[in-house]
Image 1 (cartoon, rainbow, N blue to C red):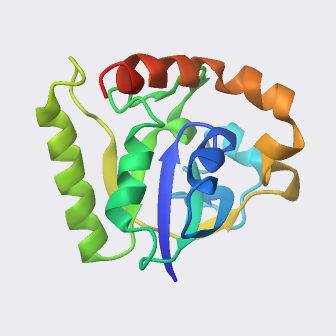
Image 2 (image 1 turned 90 degrees about the horizontal axis):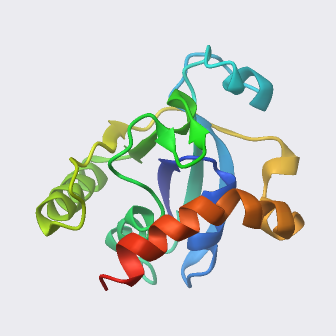
Length: 172
């Protein structure tokens, strides 16, 4: 098994897209990239811990490649918005690919460059690629949120879903 860590706005919305694929063993919502040990959701919301909401994915590279995970990731975010994602604003919601080794860094860089050259977006791709730091799992009530609270998840996911449809489904 291998690990991947992605940030793309509210972690509630980043679980389902990966959860639906074979080869993905687990997805944990959490926080990374900050300077406070064991941050809580309330602390991260204050924008004082430096953390970003993210998901940690444990996957079988024999079934799901890192490149495949990157392809899923790009289709879940607005890679042209560095200041949050959709209705979620602030540095704790910024889009980031956190790499765990040189191979992940290289693949992430190549995929970002390919997306930039594709012409799919008329603004620059601003998603950052950064070395992974300690990943802290979020509180239990955040885990598998889309399954536990489908109505609230659907409301929170609506703007993201519309963006995905506009930028990915119609151009596929």
